[in-house]
Structure formats: C-alpha cells, structure tokens
Image (cartoon, rainbow, N blue to C red; front, side):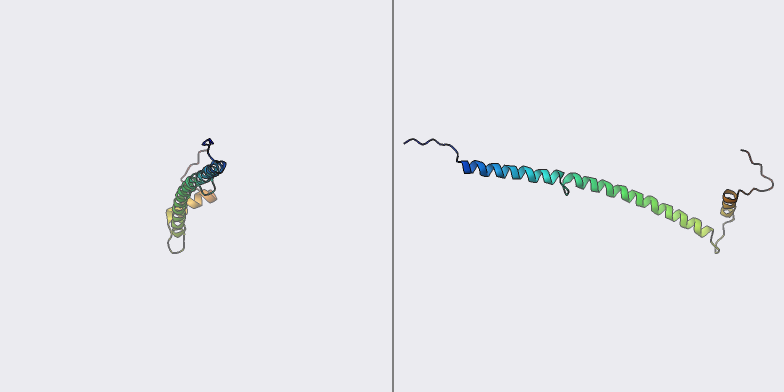
Amino acid sequence: MTRTARPALGTFVFFSVAFALAIYFTFAAVQGDFGLFRRAEIDAEARDLARQLTDVQSDVTQMENLTKRLSDDYLDLDLLDEQARSVLGMLRSDEIVIR
C-alpha cells in the first residue's frame, strides 16, 4: 500500500481562512474608520482647528481692546476721531479730500 503524501484539504482551508482574515484586519487597521489614515486626517484637522482658535482669540482680544477704548470709563480721542471719520464721513475744516 502506497499512500501519497498530500496535504489534507482541511489544513488548506484553515490556512486560507486565516490568511484572508489577516488580510482583512490589516486592511481595516490601515484604511478603516478608525485606521491609520483616518487618524492622520484627524491629527491634521486638530492642528488646523488649533491654529484657527489662536487666530480667533487674537481677534477677540483686539475687539475687546477697541471696545474698552470706546467705553464710557476710558475714552481714546484718537480712536473716536478715526471712527467718526470712517462711519460718518466727517472732516476737519483744514482738510482737503482727494478722490
């Protein structure tokens, strides 16, 4: 009796399924909703939002300064003059307007 040594079909199926699962989970770890690429996108978006937050905070600080300078407690005559000129279009009597 000669028996040929060939791999069993069950072993081949087992390793094929294990290989397919390994490929699937590797793909999901890289490309999935919680994968490496999505993590890189989230990190880049977080950096962009942090930069925007810094810009908005500086704008708010500037607006608070201007508001304080125009308040009743503290009156900046130069700022009041500038605002009256730009909003109301007022001029002093010794100025000439060139258009």
